[in-house]
Length: 245
Image 1 (cartoon, rainbow, N blue to C red):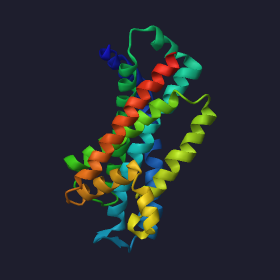
Image 2: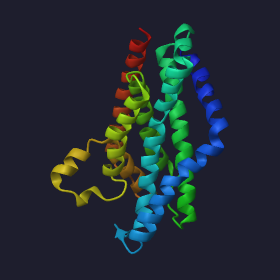
Image 3: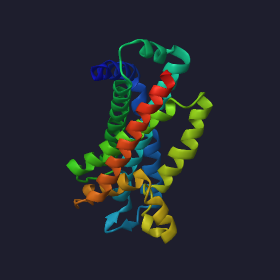
């Protein structure tokens, strides 16, 4: 039954609550270093589209963090599978694959939103005041939905933690640096721009940045994010069913 997703979600939230005081500093370390090194030191006198580089950087970091923290739910799933054998208990319980995926995806999205809030607070501390409106949060939510869905599906396929680390190295880290987080994609050659256009983080960072600057983002970015998220969500349901079998 689809109602079973609530049990999955509450379990992840109980684990997060116990770790929250340790998680918040870990969510803040990398963004703080990026803001100091890139935003304050290197980009102090830089402007991008009539905005300071620090203002350019904060929405990009928010989009990147929504990606990394949503995808991090895969590590929690693997710990539950490999060490606690929780997934086996879910298999025996009357919880559908759709409910399981939905619960884990919502947990990943919650982690992502909390991490983004930490970044926005850090940005405010560095003097960055932008417009965090509906369109901004819509981009963040869709981006976290994409990568939480991807995380659940891939977590069903990996065989060890080393495999999980490899996924982070080949998927998350390159996308974080090439998805428009730290520099405008217009600075790259046309062939690179065309290639990076298909990355979901590219559209999330673009939409979040435009809305934070007070402009109206392109509807195309939201449509692309929603389509990719739907594909990954369905893929995750199929992967969970395969893992059960």
